[in-house]
Length: 159
Image (cartoon, rainbow, N blue to C red; front, top):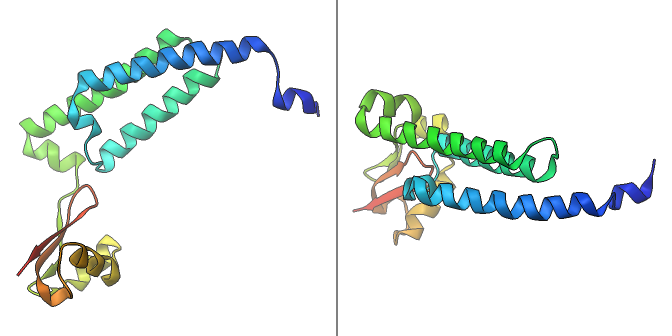
């Protein structure tokens, strides 16, 4: 094992990483600005996948010399374009929206927990109670409804 190459190989790789990294980052910021606020909104499952894919693509462009900046920028544009297309189709078609997004779930109603919903959504009573307290309630009896939204947040409607 060559210990010195583990920490430093050559200046060419470092210079490439700095130049390509700055340009790839600028490309990503530009594409995100073009795609609009929806891309940066709270993440549902589909948005999370796109975000992880964007990060993975950016890191590959930065660190793999075999990937040219133009190819990386194209990959970023394709991912953001597909995310935009899915968001557009979701607004146009309820059926498509149901296909790519989960529905909100009622996890507490009229001061009592909906135990089946808690179990199927893998939520604990303590997590729901924390959301109730964060919204000004003291106990589950203070909640008219608690809804697990499609982005994973808990919405609380107090009595």
